Length: 96
Image (cartoon, rainbow, N blue to C red; front, side):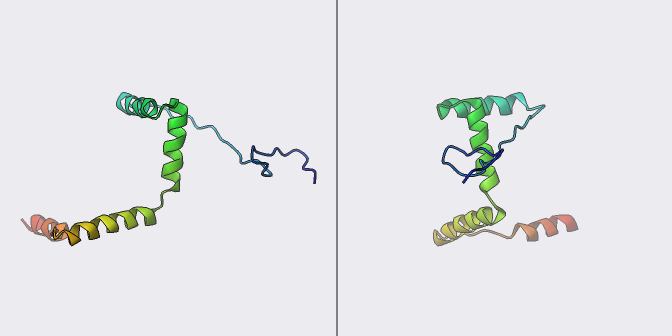
């Protein structure tokens, strides 16, 4: 089979996944410092670290976050740690 004008990726998939460049401006010095530190910790370049972080964020859904929060909450409940409803406290504060 011949594909004209398309390139295969390393695994031979047709067409190769499209890659896009992203430019981020006005990043705070602190954020850049933290990202560089993460890259060094992971023995990778800043660019590779940024790609990893962005890929992880893009793959995390709201369902994942809710599921994780629920597991943590249930784990703490099993340890007999009780939580108050902060909504009730906020409502009381508004009435003052």
